[in-house]
Image (cartoon, rainbow, N blue to C red; front, side):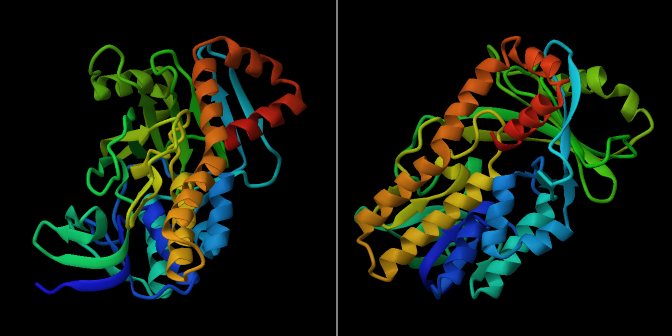
Length: 371
């Protein structure tokens, strides 16, 4: 099996990897190869919510028109607190977020990357990062195919175990979810339910295009492994039993881990850059990773572009990439830590009680949308 020679190879075609590929193409970098274990379109277990910041990145990458056309717009939310207080909040008539199925969203980004000249190699099960000394010089698949490159970008998500400059301590959020049709919901509103059985995390209902919804929970293991299906069923029985009684479930429930860290560090080594969830850049309170993946992919691509164009040394460009990631995400991650603690107190109860005041209601909705 012959080798492929490239300027940049990107491992993983989720939002981080495809955003990096699109950005490299926009920057004029040629001979970029993007690989993934699967062909596209493919399903991905995810709530599929794209935040306001994620929308801005979509606009910067030139994919927003296609994403918007395939998305369900969100203009407000229902918030249920651990104490049982229940309120509908709205930021007004503007679209605060969208829900776009990952099967569709990732494929839109991939097609844009290919339009920009990126070569996509599907069904590539990467098992090794090739090295010369300590420098990464490519990747190798389980069937022996090799892609050699001047730079390797690692975007393998939560399951990635190869190519990381250093194995870092990772925290894990568990998630399980399903899809239904025929569930009553308020148009253009998502739901976030903070229940003590899930603290400091939450359950959700996100409406999707076509009238179906996805419902799921995020939680931490408490004193040993929990039975995810039993926990999810208890949540559904408590919060959605009546609304699901005449609904039709689409497919099976699916679970997945989300990995994260408060610390943004050790994202680079000689010849390689780590982006997205592979670099533990997932929000610690909301488990959002789409925006962080795309934004870090953009910034990583710009760092590699500067090196290839000889505008910066590799050392300086990589240092700036890590600093840019800290500048972009660190405050939000710390705020997420505060929200995790808040979820274990009466604060959310008080916020919703006082949220009957319209100004506070709008401010609370905006805060939760941007956290």
